[in-house]
Length: 144
Image 1 (cartoon, helix red, strand yellow):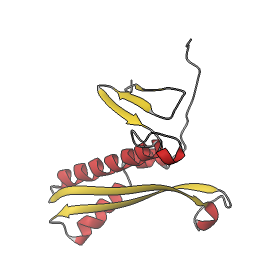
Image 2 (image 1 turned 120 degrees about the horizontal axis):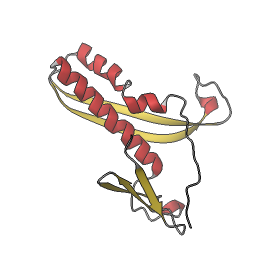
Image 3 (image 1 turned 90 degrees about the vertical axis):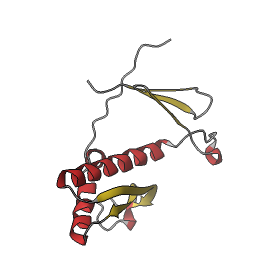
């Protein structure tokens, strides 16, 4: 059974407390949109999950190949763009979520290894999840 994630927040604001197993995180919105900026936004958390998974996947692959990868840095940003601006998009004239990802590999790697690691970066499980059809089922849980 997957680990249960619990998110709890007051209806008076945007700040949220997140529990994932023994780990505690927070989420919020910036002050410019009515939040208190006490944590990353939900979209920041999605980008962070993608970045962490990308880095872990690339590092695992390099270890298995015994390549001289020392560190991985992944920089991400989320934006919403008009689908009309996207030449490869199916739907036009609506907003499309875009996550820009830049990956840096540090270590004694040749260009072929760097290119292969870039290919592997796009195969991390979170990347696959975010680019697939996701079935989210929301139901009411007993509460008072």
